[in-house]
Length: 180
Image (cartoon, rainbow, N blue to C red):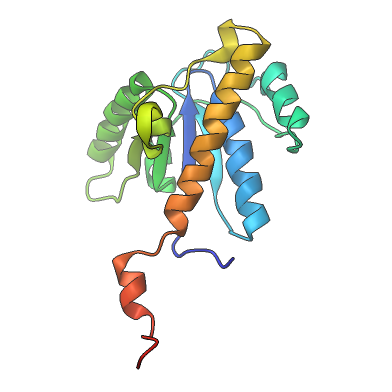
């Protein structure tokens, strides 16, 4: 399937950038590659607690168990420049979204007139009861918590991909009519 144009540059964000956001990063990068969609994908943290650390072994294990390649990754904190480098910054929780919105406003003041990323919550793309929910942090739990977080992230990544694949009204207007 040809890539929709333009594809967003996406940054996933969680608390420490060792569980949820690198999982989303790995899933979106892999699924976009499978579709032949050239995408810029990265992940970061709202905090600097885990900076420099690799992906949590339990998250990496779940990726591998599901047949996805491991992500070569070192945790990092979101920086102001990320709001210019990416089109879409996706937080895993409402608390992340609030922190990212505050940081985006600070970035706006340091770069007036710059086009800055949109900030969204991961599960807001899903319909039904999951819409507006947070992706819970599995770090404090066991294997079942990592499986649950992975499942939510995987559903949301698929929904984001489907959303980007939908033609926009401008796309439809550019297509020749079959009866022309």
